Image (cartoon, rainbow, N blue to C red):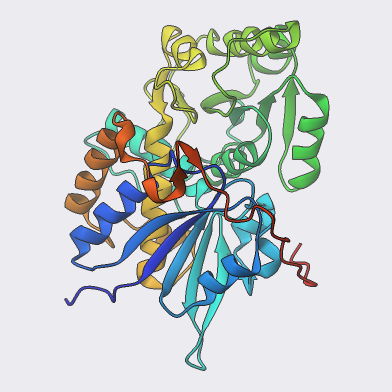
Length: 373
């Protein structure tokens, strides 16, 4: 099969000079035999210049990070359901149209980064079992002995993506640990299709999670920065999380025809600087199977590659391991992890005298009259 056509791909956001995404994507392009390139494009605003780059025929697609994940949505032709429910877009796919053109479709592959990282951990725990990647990968709803639930620690866009990922795996309700009542309410308001329960203290943990017939958390995702807690409210986040982590775990005996149950409950810690954060260490000390955030970053990057390659912005395509192949993915994983230990891999084109340059500085943000949400 001939290599895909060579195109330019960009990461838009600010600050992003530290990103390991260029290493991941350029390794993928190299293995695919194409001369495509992926570079960072530092901007704190959606500007007309940025939009022109995306619309250019030489652009094959794009990635979008903070602070633009919501701001970019009105400028797209279409957004996928996953972007719709999280009000966030981190991937732009150029999808062919019947008329011979392309439309810009926004997708949120952060959801697949979380979901596919958790599924990969299940495969590590069950090497002799088949753990599917497609939409069927889910636990049975409403088991008689109590629901299977998920936990997210944090707030904001990453929390919304993580909650949606856990829901795709059949986990419901989603418990939230967060010191800020308004952030919790914002998540609830943004995702009214999900059931959230706020855990404010160890007392709430006892009420909702301890005892026969109560919800059983199988998987959790940490989304808070790894800063030493200073206030009582910040310390209470760790205290409440510890109360969850110390709940005794027995592998469920309920029938689960599709996904095996974790032999150790899974905890995905999204921050990875440092690699072993405080929450990572707390979860590990209590016997949880901890996955570092690099794995999720890599998995969402693979989802982007698959969608760009196929020109389809769907969960099915984004989760199909056949598209890239195991050898390519293994090589990209090694290169990306190695790059994160080497500070010299930053994209120097965005840095002047040690300072990242914001291309939007002094420029007006683009204005759209379209509302997608």
